[in-house]
Length: 158
Image (cartoon, rainbow, N blue to C red; front, side, top):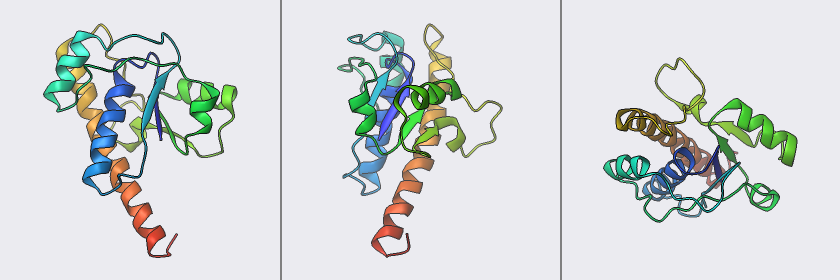
């Protein structure tokens, strides 16, 4: 599974780490989760992102951004994006299998006003907190769905 955001320094590394944690908690350790972005490889997450992520139990201290590549996309069964524009760009550039690109915000179990998971870069700690809280909700829903899908496959229901 691959999680994408624009720069791979705030949303996607947080979401990938949260997904790995949720998969471990749900007995889905075999699911590999990675993250990447469209711009700027080799950058650390901003201090605001690292600080707020830490309060959510996610360590971004050693994260270094990486750029999206054909190999990373090809190795991913599911690609989770933060906005529709990113999904369209991946589909146009890399032609992943139909149905393999998913919008993170569509997984939010709470009523939403916007499908996009907003970019918190250069915003307040409170804004980061609200974005990371939303990602946590979406990740929880995705991990639950993945667990249900794995259970159905093991029981021969899929």
